[in-house]
Length: 118
Image (cartoon, rainbow, N blue to C red; front, side):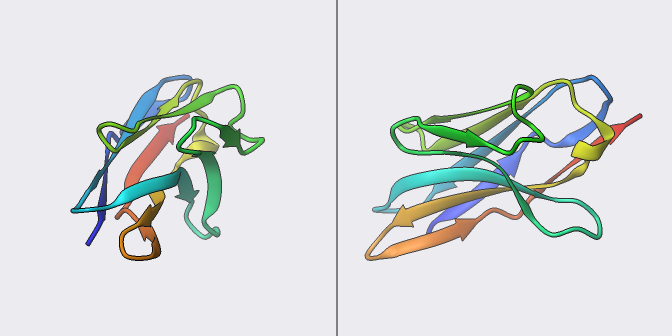
């Protein structure tokens, strides 16, 4: 069983910054691609950013230049540095990972709430 646990969400004023973390834990697994998704009230879950095991990244247009995704493969950690936050960034942010145990699995964290006040 592989688990993802997010942390770092909270309330911040517009223009502020937050750093989200995601820890992957379990036994005998390998993490491949990892990503952050978000879901705002009344909206569908959307991709924020993804990063491959080799460090290749891709961002949603709405966060390009403001958010930075990174990972520490040795620690099985994923991060999202969020700067210049806007009220429209308010959402529950979810960590996602492709992991290989006995087979390929897609795993989701429980989510962490980010609220940006105007």
